[in-house]
Image (spheres, protein in one colour):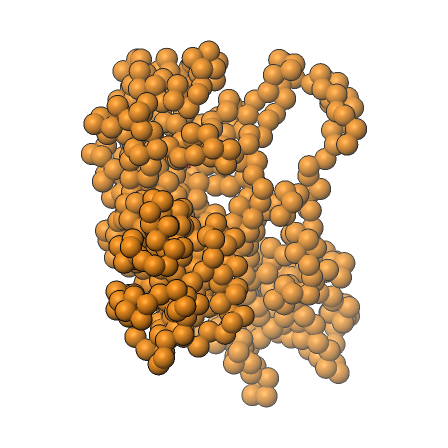
Length: 580
Ligand code: ASP
């Protein structure tokens, strides 16, 4: 229906006869002349209706979002009419014929606005109008380019994209499952995959050698801005890997390719690495934002014999005293210090001590420390006049230290612009969950070094695993591990997780059996593509890079899903629903 795109016309096309199709962005009547900005996915061009012909009269009635097909000639705009802010602002198309293909109701918000003229709920309800906005168009096209570069990269390296089932059995990744009732087997349910983890391992047992997939995963979790109940990940698995290094190299290569192809940015490879223990010790978090320093320093040794009981007791009872230096922050007000204290307390600390390195030193703990202790403390932190020391004492204060560091980093805008990738390696195999039970830190299929096998029973919380995360600017982009490929070891891990042999057989019998039929060593990774697209597009919500996302309470305002099922459907499934 068209011979050119609106946003691509330029002065070079003057004199050209073109057919264009698109939406009315805006109409202006100026006496006998009517100007219409026509929009397609490439941008806008001005249409000029200047002929007093009957068949063009309806131009006066055009409204926003009406759909047009026009035929006309590209001409230079008159001098007073140039619009240098518009890409096609030097030209216009003088319309010779027009067909109104469809009329639009007044749209609920402006397509050329910034989106603030409607609530997000309204924008999602009218997502088809929202999608016409430039920002979403750009985000979805960027997302497509990320997908294409990823597919190219892995295809060129001998990987095969294989689809894995959506109606399946639970694949535990630490979230709740979405269940789908079976009609044929009433009372039984499929689970939607939290990830293709076990299937990709099956593909390795099946000799596929190198697998990848851009795949939808489903996790029934409470939502946040960077979570969606269904999300897309780049999932990959490799047979006979040369340890985690091979996986790091592949993922780095893929990410570098995506940044080059999509943003024209060359990333520096390889990405730096930090063990989990170092990340926690130096940054208080397992996904450190490396765009600024302000590392945590342990000063326990200064206080083991201190007269200040709070610090001395913290050290004596197996805890520590540690803190950060906030450069040039000694001017923080009482209110600011109180809010930092609240941050630390919310993250599990008992209280916050602070030292303003001024002349004289002002500190919340000067009453309890000798002048010499204060001076040593300041010297140990290498703090200078004008700096502020923030100190915590006790057990399990890593998280609070990490939160303090982030809070000051944000307040002072310390993060330098750029893309700071980081591998966090050697995650612990096990951790304690919220109820204090032993749980896998990554997932139950993660392998460990043979020299640590004995600790599975004797000292489970101190086993470094072959699990690793990729972090970008303080956001976790993905995780992976080298896997267990022996049934015996896998069963041992299940036992440690208090999964009884009967339960293991019921839930994972099929998988355990496959490990007995020549499972090769293998390992892999999964990277959240929505999150990567969000960061690359400079957005702060996943909803801005997903065509049809769910709201924060897991609804789709466009379709009104989820919905109660019809009684007939429920009867077919053998399900009765209690009144809610
Ligand atoms: N299945 C894991 C996940 O989705 C990734 C992996 O271990 O490969 O987080």
